[in-house]
Image 1 (cartoon, one colour):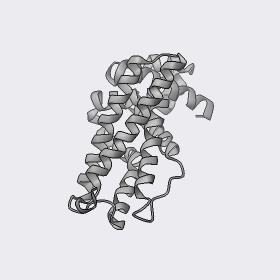
Image 2 (cartoon, rainbow, N blue to C red):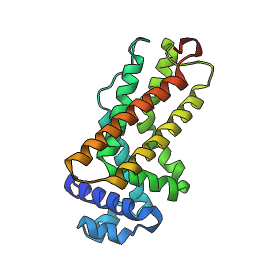
Image 3 (cartoon, rainbow, N blue to C red):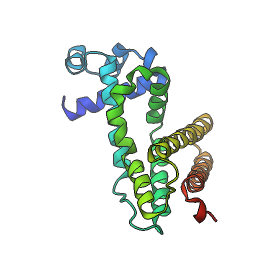
Image 4 (spheres, rainbow, N blue to C red):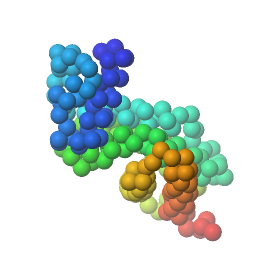
Length: 210
């Protein structure tokens, strides 16, 4: 499928999944929204679930691209500034792509049966954070009394809850006025600051806490 057709299909699928959820989304409606023929879409994707896998991979690729050129810290002193920049880029990605957040919400709610198939793609999303936690342990910025996989799950859960909270609040109050956009930016900055503060409190070795 060429890039233009693929982009049309991905956009149509994200819109349908975001609006109706995974279970209620109509495969025929997605095809209709994309402007492509049924024959073309069915040639590449035999059903809605196979398309969902590609949509999820697309989301992961976009997120990975949004994180960009961040490099893992090499000293204890610059660990938390890089951690905060990661959180800033991550939350801004979701805020600037509300359909993505809504699709992920519906996947977690409607499609737990696909967790095994989605896991390889999920690794792309967590790749930098996983590396950040391991590097932090190596350089003494992150506590070592908790297993790395436990820390990873804890930080993933914290990010998921905090992101859901800010996205739901901003979506409920979303308005095109300049004042409202400025208010949203203040909320986002507060969220980033809170996420950074909670991360430090959870991960910093006990003896290093101020």
